[in-house]
Image 1 (cartoon, rainbow, N blue to C red):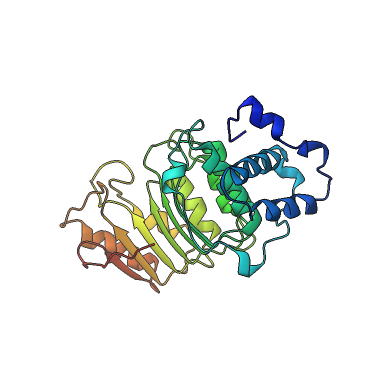
Image 2: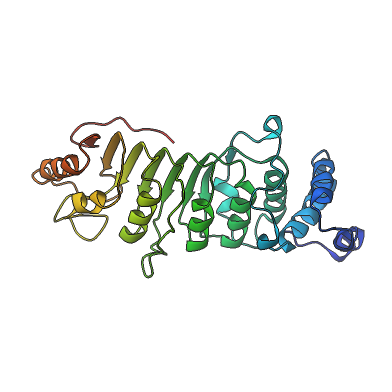
Length: 285
């Protein structure tokens, strides 16, 4: 339950669970009604709805269930503050956010941090899946990566892994019948996971910003001695690759040109640049 309610509030809740039929149309109608409410009534209503949603096993829900109409879709949703809250904090806001995403859908989400309340973020990702096109996500766990990987409409992703949670057992993402990503920026993803991600989207990916250091700089991704071999096995058809040296990635000017040239040889159709040497302008997400 995303909202800790007093016993008095609990007594005021309708017995929704006995009313939920197998058909999800009831939930959609209820959610749309709740979305018109304001103040304390909305908080209570959204908490009840979020509880109902959370109790529906994901495997019993259609992969793309009654997507919201385009005119109702939330265009942009910043989850920076709420996603940094641990499970017992900002519960009403989390409940309302989950219900809004499930009712209206969302096209673009950013600053989605997974490590503070992983279960809630996973619920949000699953409810956003039918409409989500752009995502900025930080510190995902394997289940978050798999949820994102399964989003067929996703076109633009910025992915940051700073806490090392995936390093001990790097997940391998499954192959896709047809990848859809067009633009990808990756920071800190384990090598094996990165390779599986790039292979899955090799046919569609156009622009890759890769956080990686120069040879001799240390362990991945602070340094990389074989970047050409790593990218060469992915089957990429990208038009542009930017090697981003920020966030503690090494940059030895004596070794950088050889690394860039090696990547150009395995990706001859792509423009390959070092963010520092070529003074590449930062591309905002």
